[in-house]
Length: 257
Image (cartoon, rainbow, N blue to C red):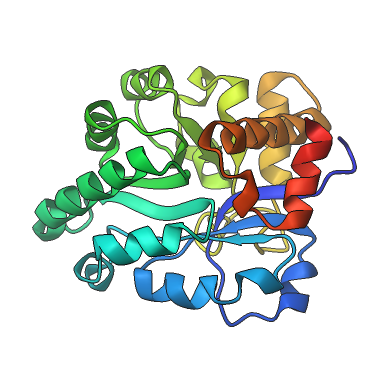
């Protein structure tokens, strides 16, 4: 699998980018959206992009996204993509936490019925996010930029969650060793999560994360990339979303299987 492209499970990309510029990144990228309005724009271009999977998101830190959440529209949008991102909780703005909990609970309930690869935000709210997942477990949960403590990380692992790791996670987390290799995925969280990472700072450049994880686990970077692809294949199979992937990405996963 050494010739397989890098895979980035969470990056933010301007949905007006040209298909050529996206393809020139030479990586399979899951592009997270912050609101249903942004998601609509992103999904309208989905069939043009060979290696990019555009997500449907309701970012908990954005008031306009929370206010714009509509269950029926969310249902319509996720019918067009295998990826939901990002949703979750963000304790940076305590005054909106009640609304965040309400929306997150509703989204999880919808995703129980229609599983998707789901990238979950948990800034200063890791325990609360895990409590939601314990109450409303979903298939396909991916905890992105995870900074939970060791006890909360163990709970998340027991729930079957996956974890997408970026350079900031490697630098700040003291619980990465608790994450099984078969639950690890890679991300940039461009443009925020890779500010201190290796240049070029662009979606899909996960080489420094691969190198850091390889050193920690005593394996090669090629093995880390292979694990990421196998884990992605498992997630796609368990969520039943392969038919929603771009054909070229589905073909890569088919070669793994």
